Length: 223
Image (cartoon, rainbow, N blue to C red; front, side, top):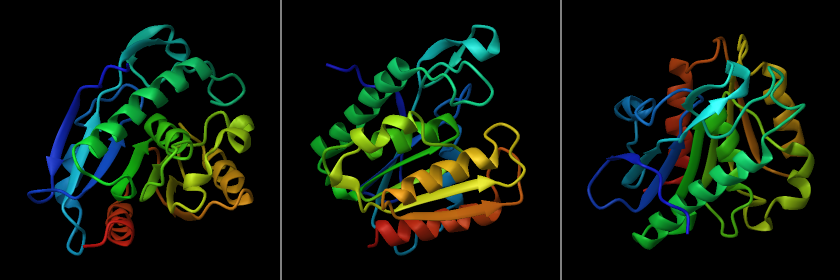
């Protein structure tokens, strides 16, 4: 039994019929993206419960073993040559448990979106496309597909056609643009429906991106 992560929850309207589970980046906290919700124009969406889970605090090798909130350990700046598969799978189980909780609370699986920024984006892509039931969509912001070499064999057909919103900054020094492009190409090569967006920004969120996120939510969670 996976212990449920601590979460911040916000509802766009009473009696939500949809949910967005949104993972923060390395070293951040669950409130990191909660402030973005009031900025989203959700007119035309069904009532949404936004769930912002808190990653456990773990030592991060790339930061000299410093303990900080993280979904998995990082060993190198390139992010992909050596990866913490066990840590990724632990967080996958914790996020899947949050999906199950929303279903238990009456939200249909296909009314759930997994979202994330940076390392949280990696977890959203990794987890969503392995789930055994179809969800509404994935929002992958300034991140990449981890464990890409095993993705083709581990992905679940349930989410083969699930819309994926991918966004990346053209001047991102943390998760370089090529890392995002490589992930986009790997997903597209397997037939996944990727909506690719770039913005003139570093490792952050762009005002135009906020409008595009709202448009995507209207597309996958319409009223």
